[in-house]
Every structure is written in C-alpha cells, then in structure tokens.
Image (cartoon, rainbow, N blue to C red; front, top):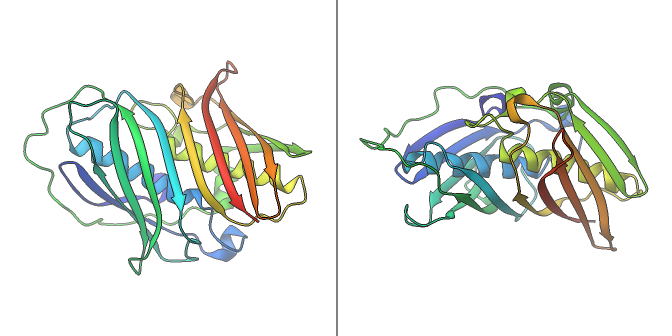
Length: 257
C-alpha cells in the first residue's frame, strides 16, 4: 500500500511490522487524524504476516475488528505489528495485531480473520529489513481527489461513491480491506454530520467482508445510516455495494460524542 505511505519495517515467518506517516493537522483539516488509519495499518500488517507464513494468496478476508484505545497522535508515525495466531492448517486463519505510535504507546489493537488460501513454500525466512524510504503521508483532501469521492447526506444517512479505486487494490485485484474501513469511517462522519452531531472520535470499527469489491478498479458505493445517537455514544452502520448493488461488506462504526 505504497500509495498510503505504508512501508514494511520488517518481516519474518508469521509476523510483520509496517509503518505509516500521519498527515499533519493543517493538511487534514480536523482536530485529530481519521481513526481508521489505524485499521488501514492493521489490515496491511496482518496481510503481510500471512504472506510471510506461506499464504501468498489468502482466499478472502472475512472480518476485521479494530479497537481504538486513544486518540491518534497528530504527527509522527504509526507502527503496525501483527502475528499469525493459529496453526497454518486451521481455517479461518486468525491474525492479531497492535498499533503503536512513535513513543511505543499502544493506540489500537486488532483482530482479523482470513479464509485459508493456497499455501506456498516460503523457503528461507524473509530477511528482516528496515524501510528504505517512506512515501509522504496522505491527507484527507488527497482521499477525496484520489478516490474521486462524491457524497450525499441528510437525515442521518449518507452515500459515498468512490469512482477511482484502482490504486488501492490488493494482490487479488480487489479493494484492500483496510481501505473499506477508511471509506466506512468517512461515510459515518457524513451521516453523523447530517444530524448536527459533533464528530468526536471512533472507538471501534468492525468489518464483515461478504464478497470482493472494487474488482480491477470498479467503482464502489458506501451507504451509512446512524442507528443510535445517544448523548455519549453514536453507532453508524454502513454497507459497501458493488457496481451490481450487491452487498460486499457490512461495517459498524462506534463513535464517542
């Protein structure tokens, strides 16, 4: 996911670590970075951990759950560390990970589940390596421009359409799982904003992957609806649709006020 400024820090059988720079506040235009950046880092780390264990082509990511433990730092780096938590022969594969900041403070933890794909001979363990270079961070304006995002909102609902997702595909040429979480959080913000709610911050994000989407860069649509808007907690449910309007993913975003 070089397009998001994510680089592999090190990798060894069954484990991986990735890093990503955080956009500065002025560029993002918000008090704190999008919490789903942690989900993006988590999903990328989990995928690399699977590849390092001999799963070069996992059949399907079926779930991702991220708990945001604290507000993401306004600058610096996010570090994602993941490890395969189940034996190779067990399916679904279970991967656990943590996200830390530059001060080694845990800011999020995650769990993902994958259907076992075809395993390969990993041969010699991958050589641990430092990231040679880290691309510049991606700002919220970049997200709108690069995804070709358009949105409609009103009465606690929002619809986002991403016309350009070709640069954000995984090895199977479908939309990267972490990007789905990112788009879902953007849709949740739009839906909450239509109610006049203050944005607050994301406490957790859970994704159930039902079918591949964004295949070969096809446009995707995200529909979000506020299902609970209490004084302290807001819950937004989203569904990601394919061009054929089939449901590809269900996402629940829990936010504080």
